[in-house]
Image 1 (cartoon, rainbow, N blue to C red):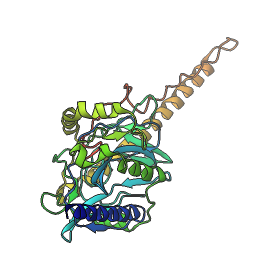
Image 2: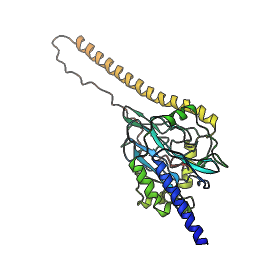
Image 3: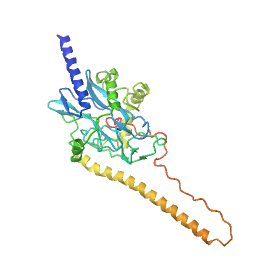
Image 4: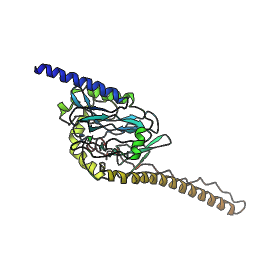
Length: 346
């Protein structure tokens, strides 16, 4: 009798897994009668491998053997200008359902879940696109400024710390979508890329990622590129730094509040700060141009005032070197993740 129940349970889980796999590319919400997913584990975000890679935070997915961890990873956006809205679990109808993530021109609602590394529960404060290039907020991302020059540093306000991985229900995040988030959800989307799908499929087939095996603490919390699960150093880093990551994330402000009031208040502030960074860059460029023009006029006036017949040599303009867009620093390894949020806030 026990054997028959076990087979039935496995078949049901397998059917649910097929349903979730299908909707992950179709953007359809599916509710299933299962328990709540585990908290988002603590992990460290790997260094961004190259310019224009976007951070995809880790999450719990569901398969034949229950929940399994899909490590956070860096991926190329399907098109310049597109940002990732993470998927999320939400309670409803007596069970927990999965809302798949998607690419869009703006970030939509992802349940108020604090995935970390810029995904604080609403919007994305890890960077922005500008003329086909992605600019990284070093307060939210682990970037090596020697290789990636489009960076800035804007502190992310920390209001509340938690690692809850679902919306609604008992103990879940009590957040509701804003008007702009609902508009983003109704807008034009691009589904997860092939690399993202392969990444999740390989995690599903890896026994070590099952919550029933790792008890909510996977050895590998994140990877530098999709499906790179063979580097055990990732796991060692995750285990050694879990507590350290949580502390660093709190001090750096990676985890933001999930209350509706906090979300509504922070959104315009972050937009203003990002615009201030861009405006400062434009002003600095204008000032340098004015200084160069003034120096050139002074040299020309000096040449005109020289006595006739006196030989002179044209001076070489002393152009100021353009300041580096980012502060020199070894590998930007100042962002360790928190639990759910970036690497997660782990």
